[in-house]
Length: 486
Image (cartoon, rainbow, N blue to C red):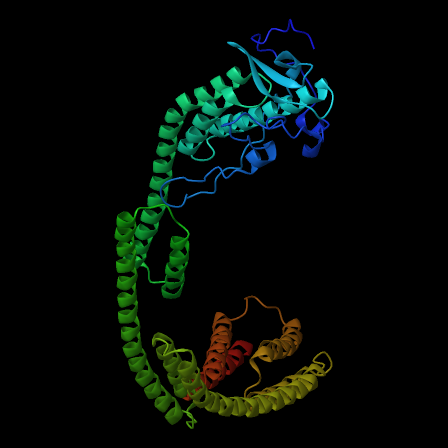
């Protein structure tokens, strides 16, 4: 070990990280029994924590005030630039095993090493310095990263600033103590910043509860989505429990606002459902009256007017509010049963009528087939007489289904045109078809459409009127055609 090393140059030679430095394991029993400071710090010097113990220290230990509103940040790892010092620059071991550290005031005895060679002893006391340096570095990192309570960091920095200069370790103890003293000086500013951060965090928590209280007040004043609003108020209570770090007075005032809003919402919801119960009672009475009317009409055979009355009852039913899911379903079943009874009877009547009309259709088709066999080119007069008789029988047959009416009439007109064409072929026509005939045919077609609409509506009065009108129009058409043929 060179005696010309400058202890004040402040330069530490680079060395492997602490975790990679082989640990000297010299049992205490190997030291002379008479040497009380062989591998222990000088009297009155607190033992420095190991880097592992410093890393496990609670950064929030001793923090004043209520629970922090947010989780503390993790303790930062030691700076990447942290290296193992070279104890040879800062101390020596003499031939008797006494260990010295260089200071600005000269050398100071720090212990005695009797467990091995001088280099191993110097490395042992160098590791003690590295442990102290690691603790200082961790405190500096926590102070810089704003983790933990600055007041507690200041207290620990003061302890280190006082104990490091006299520590039983070999290294730049004065430089390390200066770093600890610098932390003491800057901790005050950090403490003020810490308090400001706490105040800002508290203000943020207060703002969250104020927002929840305002939302609850808005729900209490405006919301009519009763279930969703009630669920939201329950969720607000659960969220409220998670917001901490507010002084009791402010917290109680905000809770009073929320509780008042929740109670107001409960009263308004209760009033709403009381009114709803009353409205449901009125709706039930109205629907029961409609059921009675439907049951009275259910046996009527006056199909047209009764169908219209049933449709009117349905419109009135839809205008009445619901009485509740279960009660409304039961009332609807009664009402619908009465309507179904009437419309089922009408359907049976329509079915019978359709059967008659289909029979009439078949009869007219048979007459049309007979008429289509007439050959006026061979016997014009005979064809004309036969067609007239067929038309009389055709007109005497009752109604046919509406869908087949047009096709049947077209077939009859085609036969008439064939016979008329044969008659016209024997003479020169100097004038077009009689406009009266054309007009009468259009009137017959319109009368047939009116009758079909009346039958579809089931209105017996309109059916009678339309039937009589159609018969009259057909008579006029026949007379017009006779006059045109003369």
